[in-house]
Each structure stands twice: as structure tokens, then as C-alpha cells.
Image (tube, rainbow, N blue to C red; front, side, top):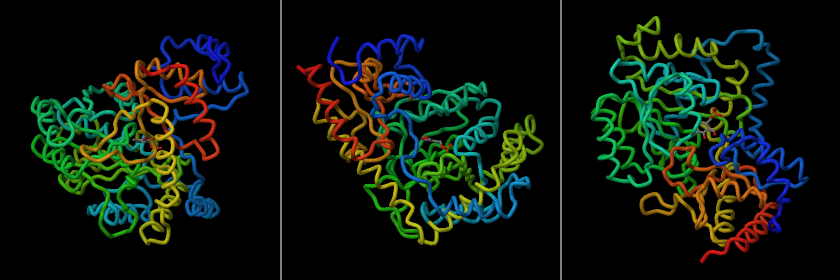
Length: 439
Ligand SMILES: Cc1ncc(COP(=O)(O)O)c(C=O)c1O
């Protein structure tokens, strides 16, 4: 028993009482619950890096627009499933101004967070053809997307892109897609959990493959334009957010308000389907929906069944935030740059104390500082490290639950850490290092 920053016995008892046979395999929400309990029992605050919640106040433009809409009485009215016109227009503008891709407003459809956008998309994209019954996850990835597949009973395969960056990606994708059973590919960019950002060359490879094998690419842009190595903040001016939509029309882009606008609580996002895919017909869709047209099936089949549209007032909020970003009157990336600053300091505190960054490069460039980073410690698996760090008042999640093959890694989310936590983090990391000397 060591002199750990959090009382050893309390942590041990709580871990045992949690009933979790392996802490490292627990879902994010289970870890949150366990840490809440230890904090309560020990009276000590953790350095909480397990959950990706926004650590900034919500955009006032959003809350004000939502209040105004509620005062106008929109709460009494069902919103149209396809979304309010203002929002559809602003999403279409946003995609043009920040990604340089043309999509008509009719193909931009609000969703209850990006999470509903993904499940609604899977319900249609994964059922286009009988023989294409499997999704390919370009991992590491957001674990809930796999959970959605499990809930739906849909098949999936995955690979960790760590060893297949750059040109190697082509061959790797070919081995999966040439089998003919892949309906959809999905990844997030910037990536949760590793914060890798695909290069334009890699996105071109993904796009070319999607064209060759007629596979739909679902590009999750929850962290759009948050690769702070490049300034993508000016509407209508390059550089733009790199996107597969430059290289294929077989795309769905998922937009979230949660992180870029710190608007997670209102659960509002958007599904953006290319015009070509929106209008395409797939006879197999008729087995599940009243229409065989992709866009129609998504709106009046999938989204209608899930929630009959997206909260009326939240749509006005998102429309207002996007309009201000599009007009250049609201520099939406300014507040979130803070995450990059935090990551820079925190990564240094970790590496100064014997830790290593796991996903450390985008091919030849050092990885960006952003919402997440990944780390390991010599001699530990990720699962062991996660548990051991709990005694030091630090919580994270194991990369294994994200489809990563880097068994040694953990994911840290910087959003809840403040400047006045740095000293305590440093103290705890030093203690850990002292107790676990590296040979
Ligand atoms: C990659 C990724 N996709 C989607 C989401 C969820 O977005 P939303 O809150 O809009 O449902 C998150 C949130 O952590 C995420 O990291």
C-alpha cells in the first residue's frame, strides 16, 4: 500500500464494490459513475479526463435564439421532420463556406445530436443492397457508433489506422472493400479518441475507394475545423476543413453543435447528404421504407421513426449560431482554441513524467493539440494503467474500447481541466512516476 494522492483503501473498496471485473473495459459512463463515487467517499477532486463534455459555456447566440423561439410559442408546434428552412439554408452555407462543398439546403436535415444523425444514417445506408450488409469502421473510433450497430443488429468490421496511414491506406481498404459486403465506412476527423487528422491524400484515397466499390462514407465532423495547426476560421476562404466530400459524392457528413458551439445539452446536430446520394434510388430500401429514394427514406422513414424530427427551439439556436459563423460575425473557433492550449500543457506534464503520447503523428507532422490526446506508460497495459491512475486521482478511458490495437494506451479529454488544475495534475503525475520508476 503506497502513499497515493487518493486514499488507497477507499479507491480499492470502491473498485471492488463497482462489480466491474475489469475497469479498463468499462464504458465511459460506468467510469464516470465510479469516479463520482470515489470523489464523494474521499472528499478529493479528480483530474477528470474520461468524458468528452464541453468545458466552456454555451454560445449565447444559440441560447438567445432559442429563448426567442420559445417565447414565440414554437414549443406547441411539431417541427417539420426535414427541418426549419432557416437551419437548412445555414447548414448548406456552412458546408460551402468552411468545407468548400456544395450541398443543397434540402439535403441538410437536423438531427437530435450527431448521435441520432449516425443511427438514422445507418438505418438507410446499411440497407441499400442485400449483399452489402457490413460497416467498416476506420478506427480508433467513437464507441457509441459500434453500440448503435449492436443495438440495430448490424454487422461491422474494423481496423486500426495507426499502421496504415498515407498510401498504405489504399491497400488496406482494398482488402476489405473488394469482398463486396461493405455498405458504409465511418470515421471521425479530427478523430475521437486519437486526434489524428486525415490528410487530403488520405481522404482522396477513401473517396476513390467509395466510388470504386459504391460504398457510402459517413464522415463525422463533430470537431469540424478544430485542427488548430491550420487556421480554418475564415468563412469562404481557404484553407478549408479537409473532407472526403471533395473526392466522392457517396458521402454523408455529420455535424454536431456539441463541441464547436458548446451546445451538447440541447442535442442538436445535422445530417448532410450529398445531392447525388440524396436523390439516388435503391430498390432494397422499399423493404423498410415507403420510398426507395435515399433522402426520402432518411427523412420520412428513419428520422420519422426515431423522433419525428428535432426539437423546434434547438433548431432555431443552431440556425442562429451557424448564421453568425457564416456571416463572420461570430468567430466560433476562438473559444474552443482553449482546448488546444490545455492539451499542449497537459501533454508536456505527462511526457515530463515518463508517459508517452501513443498516436503522436499525422504521417510526418506532430499531432495537433486539441480536445483529446492519447498516452501510455512503460510496463503497463492501458487497462492496468487506467486502474492504477485512479489511486492518483486521474481518470481516463482505455483505448481498447475504441477499436484501437494500441493496448497500452489511454485517452485523455482535456475539456474539464482548468489552468488551476495544472499544479495538482503535475503533483499527481510526479507521484505516479516516483512510485513507478522507469528502468
Ligand atoms: C466523434 C464524435 N461523434 C459524435 C459525438 C456526439 O455528438 P452529439 O453530441 O452531437 O450527439 C461525439 C461526442 O463526443 C464525438 O466525439
